[in-house]
Amino acid sequence: RLNVSIDTIRRICDDILKLKSLKIDEKSVEIVKKQGFILLALDGQDPGGDAPSIWCFVDLCSNRILATRKFDSLDHEKLRDVIEEILKVYGVKIIGWVSDKQNMIMKCHDMFYSKIPHQYCQYHFLRNTWNHLVTVDSNVYLPLKKAVNSLYIHAASKSSKVNFENVGKVSVPQAFENTDADL
Image 1 (spheres, rainbow, N blue to C red):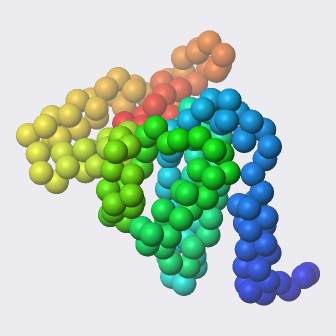
Image 2: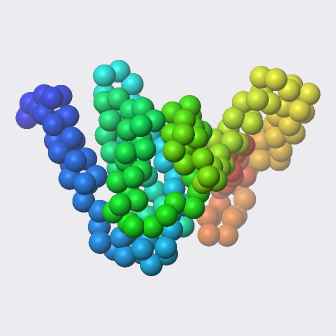
């Protein structure tokens, strides 16, 4: 049995993040420079508590990670500094932004990059639209929920097995469980 303190784990994670975030692989630089532009997606994960947030910056056209950064605190000006570092490394322009449009990202965009189009991330847009339907528009949400719940994949017997190509003999609800999870 090996005892490892949480501080040791944090230090190791910090070292790995620092190495990864400061070293951009040459293939990404080559691909993005050849492409000639960046369609920037950016998002941060806040683990809560005193732990720092980890941000990822991605070019959506090449699907390459441009940079990752760890922040104990972040504001719109620090965010701009990171974006400027990215622009300096790749030597190309940003043609658009995609984000969850949280306040700090919006402030950075509007103050420093207002001429660049900014799109709401489709995942966040759809999630927020669904939340809106749930809380505000029960005239749409309730019939939609009823229609989804009455689908055959919910009504079919769990004990009755059907032969599905490339899957084998399973129940209808089991065959469609991934689809059902998305509903």
